[in-house]
Amino acid sequence: MTETVFFGRTYGEAMNLLIEARDYFADTDAHGRITLAPLGRLEMCLETLRLTARLTQVVAWLLAQRAVHAEEMDLEEALAEPLAEIDICMEAAGRDNPDLPPRLSDLLGRSHLLYVRVARLDQLARRAL
Image 1 (spheres, rainbow, N blue to C red):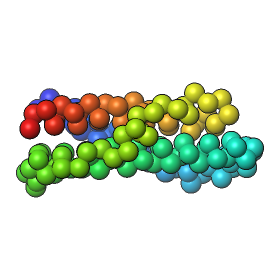
Image 2 (image 1 turned 90 degrees about the horizontal axis):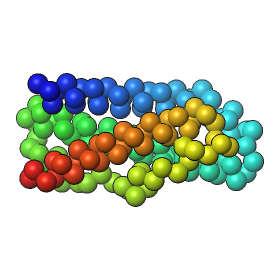
Image 3 (image 1 turned 90 degrees about the vertical axis):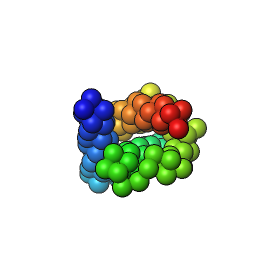
Image 4 (image 1 turned 30 degrees about the horizontal axis):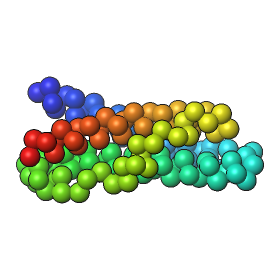
């Protein structure tokens, strides 16, 4: 039961963060880029891609684990592919950059913490095999 509650909370957190990122990109991303210098726009693009990569990897991993819990696939199959681009996603760069919009910095920080947590879960699951 504890694992299900923990998984549900982590999944909910990931989905909420994904929705927040989507809303951010749809509502304020273009305006935020306009006010930045060319190098700042480039860095903002890099960090939005990092955010997208983290969230994509986390949600894919969690969906695979949900399939394992529902007995739709086995754990070995779910863990066949490791979390992709772990070096890029593990890097905490960007969230402390004062030139980036505060909302993007917040999303970067929370996505980094979530990614690190899921990466640890991935490592624990792989050790159990």
